[in-house]
Length: 466
Image (tube, rainbow, N blue to C red; front, side, top):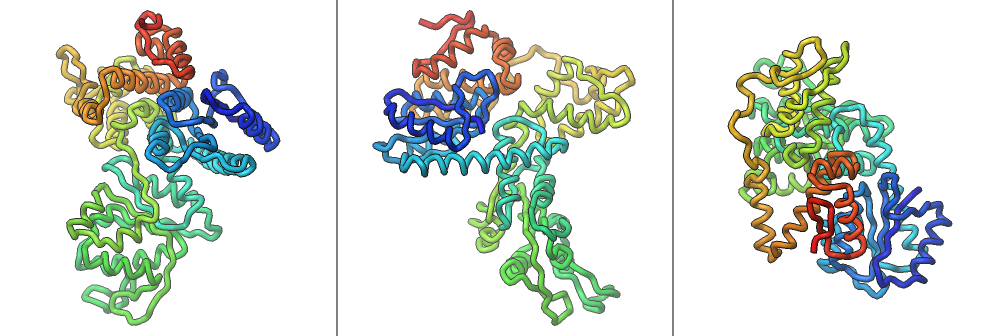
């Protein structure tokens, strides 16, 4: 197992030497932060929480490290707000220095868990649902896989319409390790008719009501020994909320018109695009039911929060829609069109856009702007700073309200731009520099300054600013 290692200035050399030796004895290969190979696992030892440590964490995440553990020196007291802020800067965990053997055991356990999830994720990469390399999406996928593989409690999936909540539920069911697992049963709560909802959930006996000519199994019976997925659970009628709660607690139910108790045992996955906690506060959703269904909560990010995934998703959809012929390539203008377009319907809308393009595409092998339907073509007026939208202003307002100065805000914006550009270009600093309109040396200098604890910054010509 290879990890990269970084020590902040002031950390005792004896502590570092002992830690590294124990890590090597445990089979770890230690690399430097500036290794040319992609770095997935990182370890940083620091004497205190400082701006320099935050810069290092942001830098290594930018370089591709997805799991970075911070270890604080023995004389540092953990547990304050400073340690929580390290998680925001990119640390995956913060550990207090204890016995070296215990520290190494903690490091190994955390990295092995992460790698086991990564192996499962890579095994799913042929599916369009897992397409995407943005940090927010990768974090959501890791959470879904960890919940599926290492937990058997109920899961609640939150997200806007079109983000893939049902696909996430199917992935949870697929990766559930129960040896005799049965089927995934889907119930859309938004389509329930209150008068018939009891039959949908519980089933009914023959003659239970007018038209009940035969007995019927409800979803509680069908999902026994499998998984029950309740889509749009926020639409569930109040009467059924209480009945569902009882089934979850007691694992038993009666059919409509029956007197016999039937046993059922299923894994419950729920999903909604509504704010259930706000509904609880308004009395529209039972608090006790919420806490039963929210054993784990996973929120899927909207496509607007993962723009770097738009093109990989579009290309994946194109390949799916051209199974019997060579997938067409994107004209550069269509490439830009897909990136600049907004997607209120999220991934579902992106797939529909690609479908419309593909339905018009000829046999020449290129998707050009002429295939974009007339009603969807962008305005031909001069382009403006469309990226400086209200979301951008909200972030700046928040920074100003929290006391950030202009230099600090500019530095954070530059850091973010570099991380995004490097991510878009799959870690290539050369292409990231071209995208940002600076030289390769400018980005290299910026990273070196960050690691050395200097105030980072660069000019467009790549020279260190005065």
